[in-house]
Amino acid sequence: MQPQRKIIHVDMDAFYASVEQLDNPGLRGKAIAVGGGHRGVVAAASYEARKFGVRSAMPSKTAREKCPHLIFVKPRFHRYKEISGKIRNIFHDYTDLVEPLSLDEAYLDVTENKKGIESANDIAREIRKRIFEETGLTASAGISVNKFLAKVASDINKPNGQKTIHPTKINTFLENLPIEKFYGVGKVTANKMHELHIFKGADLKAKTLGQLEGLFGKSGRYYYNVVRGIHNGEVKPNRIQKSVAVERTFWDDINDDDEIDEKLKSLSLDLEERLGRKEIKGKTLTLKIKYKDFSLYTRSKTQELYFENAEKFYNIAKQLWELRPYDKAIRLLGLSLSNLNTEEKKQVSVQLKIPFEEFSND
Image (tube, rainbow, N blue to C red):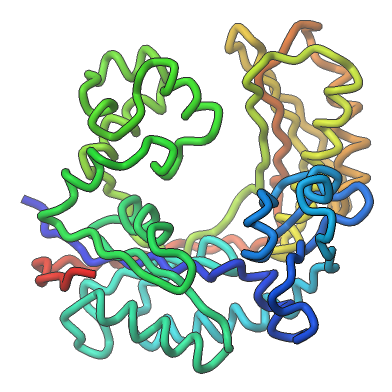
């Protein structure tokens, strides 16, 4: 039997918006959106804005309709990166097995830790306390035996809270978890599952592997495993990102030129925001199209200079769209950037595995 691990997922609370409110006291307590502007996409929303339904990746026009008094703030990625560096230094005081997902979240494997603290729950609480003391910002955390469970748990008591899913409570927790709360189940998939009368983990667990693969393809095995608490992905501290992608799956298939054009613009803006967040550039842009019959088409363009902005993404995406082989309704559009400016290096990930110490319940 494979020894269980202690994994923490730390997620900053409304990170970009919270930084702006920290640096500008006049914005505190107000509904703000980072990014957006006249035709942009919201990169992050404060909790005050979220109460009105404003969310990241939402077109600014929609955000303003939901929250007329919304204040748009220009993103300052250099500042977010500066604070992110301080937070990662705190993580490394406890373990070298830190896998950043973005500037505002990371996985930590604390099965063995530098401070000799037995309880992963205590480590998470201490890390959150230090983040607040050293940056003035709050963080939430999830603690469990694998990355999937830790990620799901970190959302439970947001903001400024934490949740431990103890090994003895995993099955009960997952069986009662609403299907839309499962990490990896997006809105479209959740709607499809609801149509199949899959509303909670218990409903998903009742399906056989064959049934899930028939309904959801390759993702079926993922759903089959995670609802049983099975997720063997290791925390990889030296993960090298090879591409950045954004995509949209449409509940109703689309085949209208104006609608396609708007989707390409929105995807281009979203891709620009994600690249800015990670300070990444790339030379190869790929358009992904999935048709209503689930056939897949991709086409790429590589240039000598790095792509850098949404306008360029959109112009090239339009060219690639015109080269599509079929003129029929589509259910998914995506853009991805590869051939990145990230340094290629060998990944060395030593995963420490020792018997799972007793969690304290939170």
